[in-house]
Length: 458
Ligand SMILES: *Cc1c(COP(=O)(O)O)cnc(C)c1O
Image (cartoon, rainbow, N blue to C red; front, side, top):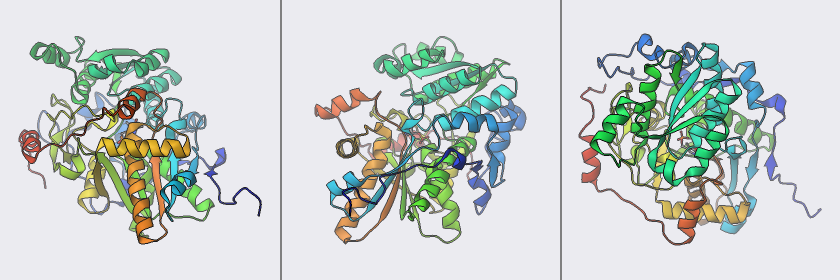
């Protein structure tokens, strides 16, 4: 026996194993999703309405029920700069927990902008350029999505305007600077650029902004300029589709070392990194494999665990189509937790359906316990995780402790959706004992749900 264990610490796929297709879970749903409704007519939204802000190829993907959708060569080439991403075995974390569980994580923080969001930013920029679009408008909260899209627009020769939630714009300058470095235009939202922004400022000149308001601004910008489209970093079917490169690679990597997960875990904001990792395993589940799929959200923004499964708007102003999803109400403003990417009132309609049908589990954790696990992970594995990803880490720790209590092996796979190098202020707050947990009463949550659009859900 040499001093180096034969159990691999990381599994790397060669470039030739980069997936050639995205996996479309709409092909494997027992029944189709409810139609998306127009905010203007409350009737199913038309291709013409959506065509004002999305290119044809993405609209087609949004509705498609083809199981596998080919990844265009220019997108595969762009992916190859950082994909396939590594799969790591968290052996030092296992040892520190004294667990018989084997913990694996897929690391998406190696993408140029630092998170999984690059996986959808690149194809979205590509398809828009192919459609003759010159500029993309989008929103960003903490800035991960804005950074990813700024980078992708630069690669495919498009302009990029990012409406950044004002509180983040002011308190978290580093991702704003990164977006500027990529050459994007970044506006603090609410801004004077749009009607939605001006109306919000008229009501409250000191508005800190929210993701919902910033979406309203970006959608209005796109709808009012012919050469400009809108891009969304999560929630929609085509975004989840693009992220399935993560789960396809992870499945192949685990199988190289003779493993299959008992549980697959992702943090949950709008649903894209969770779905990206988990959906390729859903197909196995449908074929009879036993695998649990667990989405982890913050207790302070508990759409999947405490929200209603109902029709709601994607934004605050009610400009986006209405979708059936788990929601806390489009007017819900989540407390200022440090995992900014998980502060969204709604959820992907696709994951919502899977949750409603019992194919996906959901749990919620407080940020203080999440950061405790993040630090344990950092000290064991050396990587500083994004606060969002740390929610998945904490659930992996919970599962590993349970395995230890039961004295049973368990294979745990989670998505490390991004690194935390731009989130050091959050770590400073945690290490200084300044993190606060938030719990809304049922009455508080009921307020947000009282203002849902009046549409009967089937
Ligand atoms: C945006 C973000 C999330 C949350 O968004 P999802 O669409 O739910 O994946 C999670 N992790 C990181 C690192 C992010 O940037």
